[in-house]
Image (cartoon, rainbow, N blue to C red; front, side, top):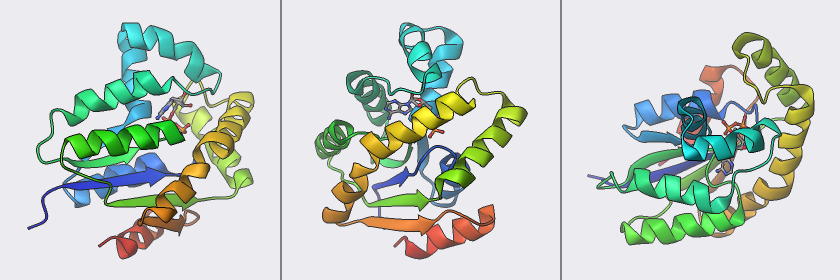
Amino acid sequence: MRTGEVLILMGPPGAGKGTQAERLAASRCLTKLSTGDMLRDHVQRETELGLKARAIMDRGDLVSDDLIVAMVRSELETQEPVRVLLDGFPRTTPQAEALDTLLAEFNSEVSAAIALDVVEDVLVQRLLGRAEQEGRSDDNEETIRKRMHVYNEKTAPLLRYYQVRCCLSVIDGVGSMDEVFDRISEVLP
Ligand code: ADP
């Protein structure tokens, strides 16, 4: 039986990572680690990390690699074998390199990376719609544009990182939640 499994779900803000991450983790018995959710939890509890992260998140920038990697490490330490779905991490090349090192320490490695592909206009519409429903403090047009820019600059290069290392699938993220979920399931071993 396969024991360890590390799936990475990537995609720009609004691509539907959170929703798909939830379903994929449940269907494959993986622990979902969403760095965005973990950070929002810190912000809400007003921890030291949360106090540092709040302003950075509200302006659409990335929290520092060191803080993020430390946060992920403490989660992975509770896992044996490592069975996780990573949502929103890694987001920079140093984070991807740190993940490889961390996983090697835990005798594990990335099993597959999925990138959800959605054009920018659709993303902005989705996020503005979500802003009305959920009121997330970084879902205003200015911060959304900034997050897109940061994604294109810092995170999009990671697609190539995983493409050359084995395991990237780019999935069309436009369609119903079920359609997208089926597309992802089809490419996973
Ligand atoms: P989205 O993908 O819609 O931007 P997330 O919930 O994944 O939403 O992230 C929200 C914010 O949290 C990001 O804009 C960033 O400030 C911070 N964040 C989340 N994950 C990371 C990460 N891996 N590295 C740095 N910052 C992160």
